[in-house]
Image (cartoon, rainbow over all chains, first blue to last red; front, side):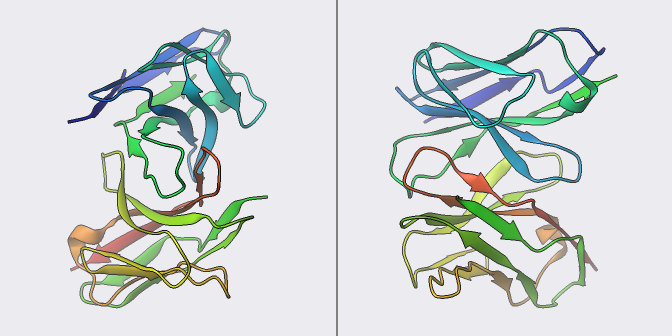
Length: 114
Length: 111
C-alpha cells in the first residue's frame, strides 16, 4: 500500500532563518506531488506541484521554493523565512493526470515563524 | 480561471440537525468535484467525489450532487453527529494537474 510521510510535524523558526520541509511517498512510482499551505483562517492554497523529477510548477509568487531530487521526494524550502510564512503545510500526492484522481495527504507541518 | 467558493463558517449545529454546506465553482472544461474533510489533529482525507454532471457522491451519510446548471456541489447530511465536527473543504480538479480548494468550513456539532 502507498504511504506518504511528511516531517517535521511542528517547527518554530525565527524570521530570516532557512526552511526545509521534506515529504516522501512510498509504494508507488512517478506520483504527482503537491505542496499546499493552510494559513490561519484561510483555505488551502496550492504552492507547488510536480509531475516528475526536476519538474516544478509554481502557482503563486512567494518566498518559498520546491525541489524534487528523487521520484518520490518533494522538498519545500526557503532561504529566509518571513512572518507571513507561518501556517500549516501539507504535502500530497496523486496517481495520474486524470481529473477524477483524488489526492492523498500527509499529516502536515505546523510552521510558526517568530 | 478555476476557483471554488465555499460558504463561510463556522457552522454550529445540534446533534441530529440537518447540514448543508454550500459550494459553487468556476471552471473551464469538465472538472471533477470533491469534498475533503479534516478532523481535529489530522490531515485531509477524501469524503466524496463526483466526476460528471448529475453524479451524486456519497459517504458516511454525506451527499453532494454535481449540478452543472448552477455550478454547485453542496454538501448535505440529514442528521449530523458530534463525530462529524471537522473542517470541510470543497475542491475541483480541472483538466490539468492541480486541485483547487475552497476556504474550508468549520463544523461544530454539539450534543
